[in-house]
Length: 186
Image 1 (spheres, rainbow, N blue to C red):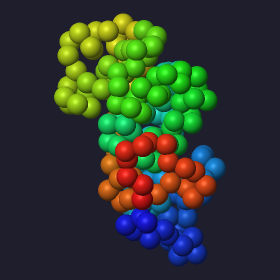
Image 2 (image 1 turned 30 degrees about the horizontal axis):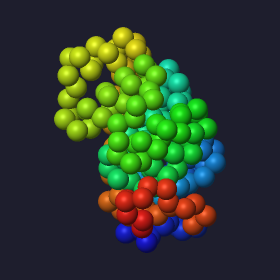
Image 3 (image 1 turned 180 degrees about the horizontal axis):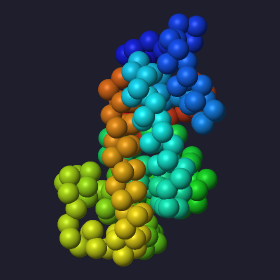
């Protein structure tokens, strides 16, 4: 059960209603961290806009964005993040052996060059809070400057998402079974 109750739409103030309507128009549902962020309408608004760009409009292929999101979700042991984005990663064409390795906390071995660059960069910045010159140069060569900046922002944004989901114990939708074996289920 989440640590904060869900808002009753009938009790939204005007700003919350506007943000709620924008999120629904953009994503089709109000799930995950949005239910928490609506307690702070300005945070919800700005985070939603950034998240929409990072999820749907960067120069990275969706397969690479979803790989980075899974690396973050696994790092933070975030059941909701992992379970929802595992499906998106499969739909985006990320190979099942890569997903399975990440789930088991193993280093994937069947990575294409761009996937290896994303995996190493995201993993290194999450663990060490910096990246080595070698990792940076490899990612820059594989992705280019613009995509590397966007990748860094994707990692940072999904850290925010994962921390929100875990801290406020946001559950999966009732009709979705958890797929991360050792992560808490709220």
